[in-house]
Image (cartoon, rainbow, N blue to C red):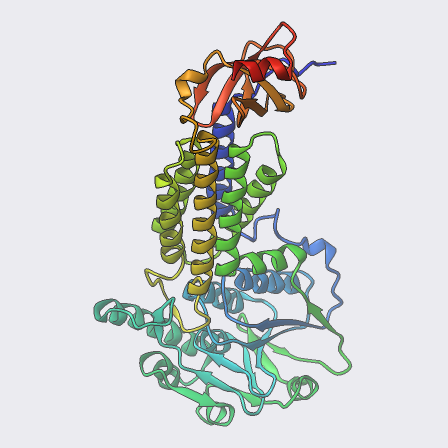
Amino acid sequence: MLDLSKYKVTRATRVLLSVLVILVGLFGTLSVPIDHPAFAQSSDSIELNPGVVLIRLDGAIDGVTARFIDRGLETAISQESDLIVLMIDTPGGLLDATRDIVESVLASTVPVVVYVAPEGAQAASAGTFVGAAADVLVMAPSTNIGAASVVNSDGSDLPDTLSRKVSQDAAAFIRSIAERRGRNVSALEDTVLSAAAYSATEAVELGIADLIAPDYQSLLRLLDGRSVEINDSIVVLELDNTDTTTLELSLLEQLLTFISNPDIAFLLISLGGLGVIVELWSPGLWIPGTLGALFLILGWAGVGQLPFSWAGVALISLSLLLFYLESTAVGIGYFGVSGTISLILGGFFLVGFFGTPGTLGDDPTISKWLLVLVAIASGGLVLWFTSEVRKARYISPYQSPTVSTSLIGTMGLVTVDLAPVGQVSVNGEYWTGELDIDSAEDAAVGTGVEVVSVDGNHLRVRLVRTKTTVSDVSNSE
């Protein structure tokens, strides 16, 4: 068998591995789209009988929901279903994600019906574009559509010049949709330029919506026998006694929906960074480092589905570096305080601060309360760590502080197995100990060691070949 015991993982190697984990989590997850084969549920695993495929959109439109709808449309088309019903209730969402959905709806070779339901639902803002793109737009009573003005991702107004540019672009987009589907161009254009909104009755009267249906079964009865034009061909819907298959989010899509919440993504990154730093502070624990790496990857994956800023990413990455530097400093707390400030600023700038253009919907911003809680937790941890380091340097008011250089050559005892990293007791103080690179064997608890070098709060030690006892160490102190 291959003996790995002679290979020692140095502290520099651990730091390098940690940096690689962070970079892989950052750049890898931000660059892999959700519709990559590794994330998508295989269409071969979904068996649909020809009939109606029902896809529900309940909530804001973002990257995850857009790709879910795209996948649902592609699945229904590949299975040659008779009809796709997209039931929506949305306050709006991201403009790029909306464009993706509209493109998929317009390109569908299976008739697509957008049904704004149940009663009280809305197809506001981004939902207006999706509804207008349908072959047939149906609304339940007491629903509304419109108010599609383009705003910042945090819901605030855009600067005047940018607002005119983006608004005209969105207006041209909705005009092209209206012309393609034969809907009221001016009424839909007003939803963008004047934030106009319409009730279900008004939408039908103005030629924006086609029908009003109180429930899903009524919808199918109204559509039965209706003619729809698909690729210059007329398709007559035959929906009498048809079956309906409802597509659900896959497990991975549900996970991505959860972690793409800005608060969850930021919390995962904060906890992940903490786990990695704890592993660097006390090497050999493995659990904090493993969980930390996992949380970092999940957190960056969530951020990748949001309109993030690289300034926030850079500040958060800087905070992790500063926290690590704090673990190697002498306990003055400067790096820890700077890291805490950098982390909070990174969270503040990470999502929504710079205002990427979108349509009004749920604000993709990190809760200020969460930033406050993370600041308190990080600050408390830094203060505790600084206090512990100082205690380790000063045993009591009547003792002189331990001078790092004076430790070289001092005898100590192993208190946590060195394999090759653990803990040693030197001069009555507990230090993180690491076996010298030349040591060919691990050191068990109670083994005598001698300090050969000092690096912050880490001691590099070598085994003492002669028998060392507790009394010997006490006498040397």
